[in-house]
Length: 458
Image 1: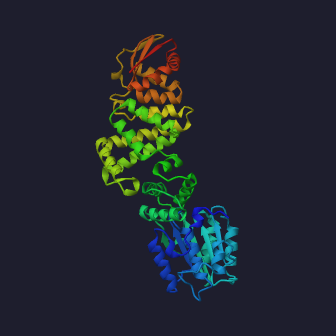
Image 2: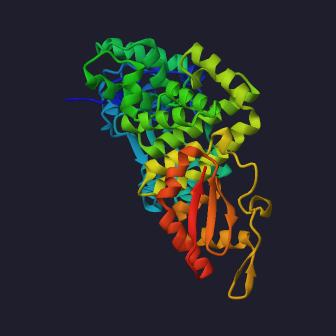
């Protein structure tokens, strides 16, 4: 029967835990010294070994091939096998995310006072314990206050801050950390060798990097890569996850920094032609600028980049952009995210968003500033209306997507009773605005109650 990698290579003893050496040592010593707590609290991000450690602890306490609890369970006896297969009578695992009612906890509390059927201890593993209802938490607390001597509770959670202090204070707490890149890379290489997979060093580092400290995610990605039947390279990893390679993001931002409209558009269109989703490109670009921001204050951690060459390039680019420029770019991209997410022409608005990062696209004046408008106030039906007021009314009457384009990249350069000129601060966007000229003229007509001919300049 086929087993996913994260199950096939689940650690079976404390020595097998990846990246949690301090916790493995503390639990092992506690068992060997007979200092067994009645309740343990395992906290930390997903995929870092909390549930696996709970099962190892259960095996260690109940291994039948040892006369006493041991830190090295055999893995072969009926008790160990039953725990591995989740069929052990004296070890109950409960997912509090879906079984969070008080009745389930009351059943556990009642069963806790019964003698174990086969093993030394009855063990209750409650995953995502923070998901218990208030009444269920109170019911659990009563049992934790006066637990039976042969019962051990193991509470696992990714959000310990949601647990009341009354629960936390009654547990022996272990904080699982995100697994380091080096530890994860070593583990991935071992599994690749066991599975007969060819994977280069950059690919294994990238898989570990994308997993962001969660070994389960890394193994799931490695399993997908194993289906490609070819040498696993970093390029294959990027293609499989659908993200934009960091080197391509680097090239794109370098084109932006050089204020090259044509190179910037070509880079974006290349990414789109390779099937990258516009929203993913925008989000990856935002993350990249965030990475550059880190470089403004300290050396970029190794786990955030793939090669030493890229580290040097990132440092150089971050210095040239400057802190204020990077912050402005991040803010601009975040503002554009919802527009791209909900637009039917997301590719178009991705181009608009990226062109807005060009130095020449940064406004030297505000579109609503009267100094940017050379024409005197116009008179409609005997009422004098300032051009800036007309422009704001026009912006309010165009579709939201067009409003973003006009407000961020255009200004009303001149205006009179029957004509208006719109200045676009990027030649690459002039065609986009020209294409919307009929809509803009319609908005002017609604704002002024007369026909206004619109011309577009760059």
